[in-house]
Length: 199
Image (cartoon, rainbow, N blue to C red; front, side):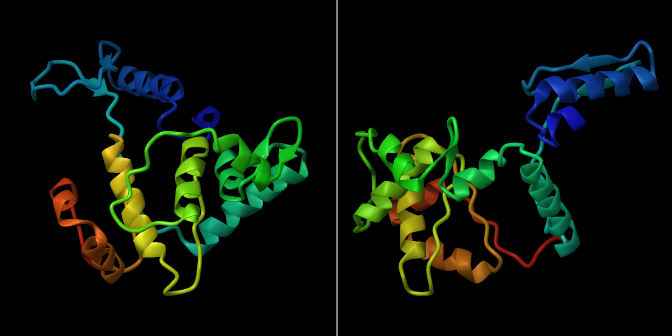
């Protein structure tokens, strides 16, 4: 699992662990790597299936601090900045780091249609370009600067281009505000889970 760097989507590394698990339970056990839905069935021998799930939990301040210290140490030893952090910092690696201006120039080639149902500006269009080239984009600003409006436009664009989104927030109120900004026509495509957490 260490080779997968804690990435559950690294199927090759995870599969080895699952195969070892089922064979440690019973030498006749089977490992099923298909992602197709199966009917529940009884079996005389154990069957382990590859069935990834996304579980979100709040990370403790201590855990986050330790993760950031590990990343800092990796960078100090000359390793690359993890891609997610580089994307958020709007830098990329190509024989050295490119500036955010170079990243913008690299992504300006996108000439597809942008599907924003609400009024928009050039900055929102640049965000769409950056999303196409990076695995993360940081949008920040003080209250009242239009972040929720921008997120509503991005949700609509991503849905219109056949993509899925997962929106999370610290409070249900933030999600309710965002829900109110999504056009009525698109709300049936959205599933809302608002609450204070799981017991």
